[in-house]
Amino acid sequence: MNTESPKLEGTPLIKPSTTEHPLYDAVVEGCRTVYDPEIPVNIYDLGLVYTIDINDENEVFIAMTLTAPGCPVAGDMPGWIIDAVSPIQGVKDVQVELTWDPPWGMDMMSDEARLELGFM
Image (cartoon, rainbow, N blue to C red; front, side):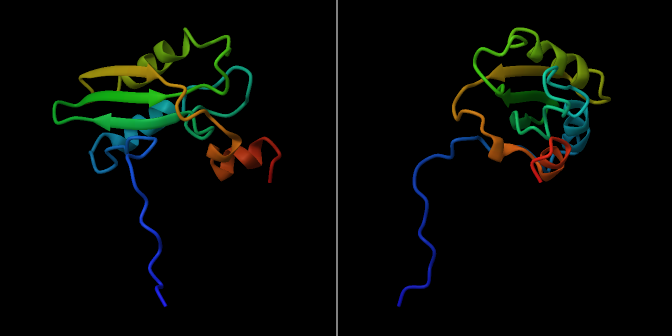
């Protein structure tokens, strides 16, 4: 009997973050200061931040989504994140890209966000 779990094939839907970078935790905390104006939870715990990629030059690339493509702050949110992350000591540059693939779902929220919104 084969007890190995099946291997997943293909590329991941979301590029992994550079969690080992020394600035990673500070960038996450910067993202946590940005809130979706319609939901009283920060964008990181809502699961809107898909990837935080920090290169050797301390340039930060953030891939994120919004709760819905028609979100009224779609044009503003990337600037809010840049404003929150740019002042972090050591960060050289910040770029934010909105993506709709994969689409956001409530299952992407942290347990803290679920609790805050009454889903737990």
